[in-house]
Image 1 (cartoon, rainbow over the protein chains, first blue to last red):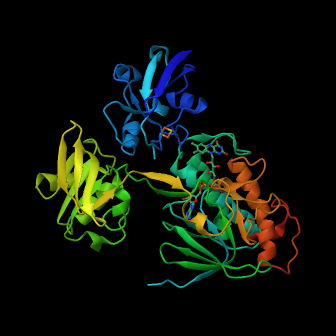
Image 2: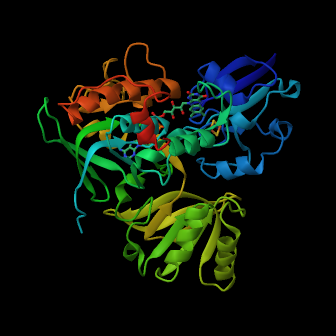
Image 3: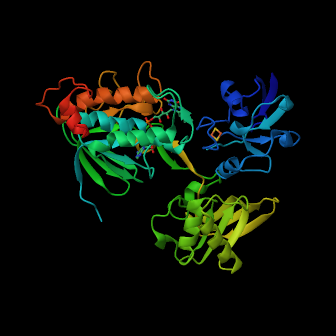
Length: 106
Length: 346
Ligand SMILES: Cc1cc2nc3c(=O)[nH]c(=O)nc-3n(C[C@H](O)[C@H](O)[C@H](O)COP(=O)(O)OP(=O)(O)OC[C@H]3O[C@@H](n4cnc5c(N)ncnc54)[C@H](O)[C@@H]3O)c2cc1C
Ligand code: FES
């Protein structure tokens, strides 16, 4: 299992154990993590699963695809470390991953 | 100019998969429909949110994509020649008749009105509406200085216009409003655009000629008074702040689903859903039906297949409202020559 920590916009942190091959979004929804909406259910079509990846972890999550970059245009307060959490696959290298959720998704 | 009122048996609010299949069930019973959707195309969530994703639980279709299902449904309803009104939001629903012989007037934000015997609300997760950018106090400027769509080009004549976005809508309006506006500034968070290459090239040429501005970054705050904008603060990718002259702002941030005007139609609501019975899927107002994701009842599942079933049963009751003197007999499409004639296969 891979540990993921979600920090909400108020600074409260919640950690979950994630299975390899699932996505960071799926684990948030499964564990009722606030501030992740995922209206399109992982289709890379809604940008309501936006997260900021902790700088140290950002390189390990891989490059966003063109489609994800296009969709990030619809997210709010996008930063260089912004990702759509439905597009981040859980791998063993991500054990300990920390992401922060924005105050608003849609 | 007010268009003439359209007379029909049923107005269906929402052209998602469930609204579409209702057309088929009604068509078999000789009931005619008009469908209205705010999207420019049919298919609701399937077409807007997951056109390429496979769906595995449509009975008899082990695997069909969201768009594939919509295309098939459109083909299936073709024989009944439903009339589609795209890009219009149903705003008002007014009761004209009695509970025994209901009739309604439906009005869209485009000024089109309909008179019909029954209404089916197949509004799913709600109206697809433009997302609003998270700028404090933006509501105060909406409709006067901030627009999420361009309805009247004249609103932008001789104004400093700021357009935010990197897709076709943003680029098209940049090019269309450019001849008319005082100055256009296109704001996008990166130097890559999703829009058609020829419009991106045309925009870049205007920038090179000094005829408009392209700024990379995001709008952080607005200044103005009494609903009229005067400026906007741009936060650049490098965290620098720039003041932009801005009298009109057009942000394009994609779509989200909101319940919308349905809440004002005098219908019972339960957590933004319409409670119905499970025999006819009728709301608390006789003649107004609700099917698909928008309704609720004990055991409700938000699945496409359940919406199809609801449409079939609602159609039976609707037939009684539309043809009070006709008796319905149960027929199969496989064997009834009358039904096959309606389908144009016989
Ligand atoms: C990612 C994802 C995956 C899914 N996968 C499945 C699956 O595998 N199987 C399954 O069965 N279901 C699935 N669903 C659910 C399924 O898509 C919905 O149950 C289905 O779309 C509901 O159909 P509908 O016609 O009721 O509403 P919708 O598809 O929501 O369509 C409603 C339409 O009504 C319009 N509308 C609403 N109000 C107004 C108004 N006032 N004026 C004008 N237009 C209006 C909206 O713009 C919209 O186009 C999935 C959903 C998502 C998001
Ligand atoms: S869940 Fe919609 S883009 Fe990630």
